[in-house]
Amino acid sequence: YVNTMIKICWMAFLDKLLEDSDESWYTLKKVKEMASGFGISGSECDRILELFHELGILIHLTGTTNLRNIVTTNPQWLIDSLSQVIRDESLHKYDEEKIETAGLTEELSRLTKDAILSRDLTLHFWGHEKEDFLLDLMRRTLLLSDWEFGEEGMYLVPSLLRDNRNDVDILREQVADEQTDYMCQFDFSGSYLPTGIFQRLVCLWVNHSGRNKASEEPILSKSNAKVWYGGNVVYLRKERTKICLTVRDEDFAKKALSITKSMLWKIKQDVMGEGLSWDIILENVNYGKGKINTDSLNLNRSFATFKKAQKLKLAPWFETANQEPKRDIPIENFELNSFLDAL
Image 1 (cartoon, rainbow, N blue to C red):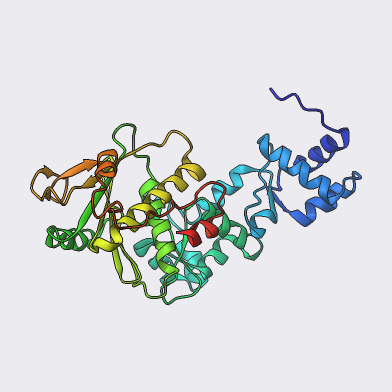
Image 2: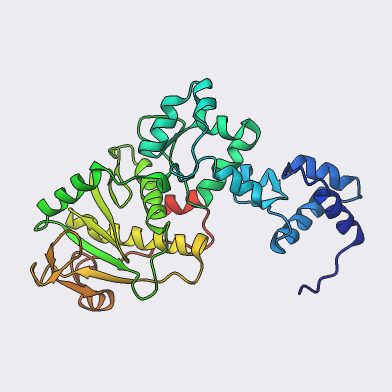
């Protein structure tokens, strides 16, 4: 239970806010206008919203200006709004007739085939007043990434990615490069690998990639991703209870490992909570290929645990004696853009 002294005018204001069951959300401006009718100032209203959000009575996110501008009184509205974009099309069809009438058939086709969402579609689904809020909400929860590859007003929705020809092509490339690349595995078998973790990791890598103007357009599918960061290539693959990271450039391997570790911690902190845990296993290239067989690629590699690799300063993952150690990327209390800037 909660033992907190609350002013009577605060409770009267809350009753007013929740009394209309047909209203699922209000703008912050409207909420403060309502609060003023109870003698509540703007700063006091902010404190009330913070308290009622912490108590789960309403939802008021403050991470960005767009998030702060909307106060949600009916959480089901958020679910319904997001499900207009994220849905299992085999069970819940998009309203193709309305979309065709709006002239957005090609945009819908690209969303369902390539998981690329256009700004025109978000406007159609959500309307102008709610659009920026819901886009920022999806960014904040890592359900969406800006698609910065030669097109404006486009977004990647990784949960809509499908198994396709890209799986075969990406796997074939990794087989061909078995002797010259470097692999590490994030092993979740000690607990479990929840649905959505791989997709959120892809979301962060694509967002990070798009910030480097020299990056090529990623090649993506449901279980595989080939992402560029400038001239460096990163392969990501989901295998049962593992996420595999493979890089070609020895000089980029340590950086790619550090970035991916930070991204997974960011996902754990912002989305999943304490239940998410993993072990890191690193390829021991000094020992040579041909010792351990991985799952789907039939590659033969030798691996070491993270602690052992760290103790041995195993190249290319850790500093050798003549390299300066670098600080870990900060994670805690970082807004998404600040976090990506620090990578």
